[in-house]
Structure formats: C-alpha cells, structure tokens
Length: 168
Image 1 (cartoon, helix red, strand yellow):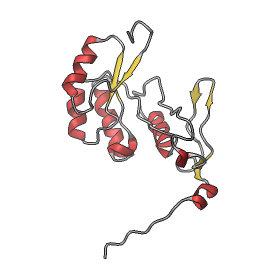
Image 2 (cartoon, rainbow, N blue to C red):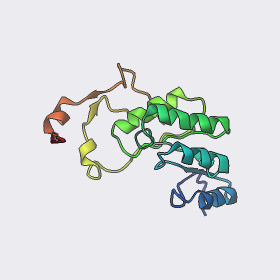
Image 3 (cartoon, rainbow, N blue to C red):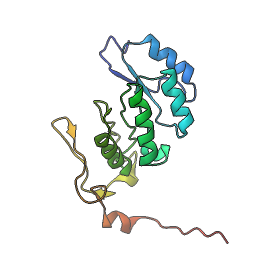
C-alpha cells in the first residue's frame, strides 16, 4: 500500500531491536526502509549495516552519544554504500546538531527529518534558541553563526526550571 501511494521512506517498521524482522521488510519492499534512531551501541550499528537491515541509517546525535559517535555510524554506512538521514525528533538542539552532521558527511540522504508537531506537543521547545532554522524553497539551511550557529534564548532561560544535584 505504501509503495502504491508513492511513499519513498518507511521509518522503523518493526521494533528497533528486531533487526532480522526489519531486514525482512527491507527485502520485501522497493521503497527505502530506514532505522536506527534509537540505537546507541556501535556493535548494534555494525550488525545493522552488515545485515543490510535497512536501506537508510538514522543515527540520532543525542541518542548515539554525540557527534563523534554519530560520525562513526555514518562512516560504517558509507563504507557499505548506505545513505544517512539522521534522526531529529523535535525542534530542540537535536535539529541543529542534525543539520551540522548532515552537512559534514558524504552519504547524507535527500531528506531532513523535521518535526511538524504543534507547539502544544513539545511546549518546552518553543523559543529555545535563536535563530530558528526555517524551511525555504523546500530546503533547511545549516545555522551559520559561531559554534552550532544558534544562541540560547535569554527569555527561554529565564522561564526555565533549575535543579542542582549533589552526591553527598
């Protein structure tokens, strides 16, 4: 049915830990099956790539343990000829990290995962940083300022709850 309607990207069709199930779906379909957004262990990524469980890898910079580990995943995929469309669950800094990752790799897929949930779904992300990336002409640009290219919003920080943890 998905193929009949022109769907080109099917994300995580099975429980993420069931790589063999996902591989069966990948083998059965002509559309791209993507996965890995929840995986954080490099041995799992190696296994996923070796099994050809997916057509497109989707590491999440925050889940996988940072930019360096995400780059390791993208290299594994690139060596196997697989594209990478990094996972970006919401409009927090994970989107900014994802845009930078995609711009830095050779095997970036043709899409950017961009949350379309209403502000009421993730109210904490509203006004988190500036400037907010904006889709223009079907494209989303990488922020170009210093560092990650964005600055935390002083208004958001003023409204934030703070907690201090102590070990003793």
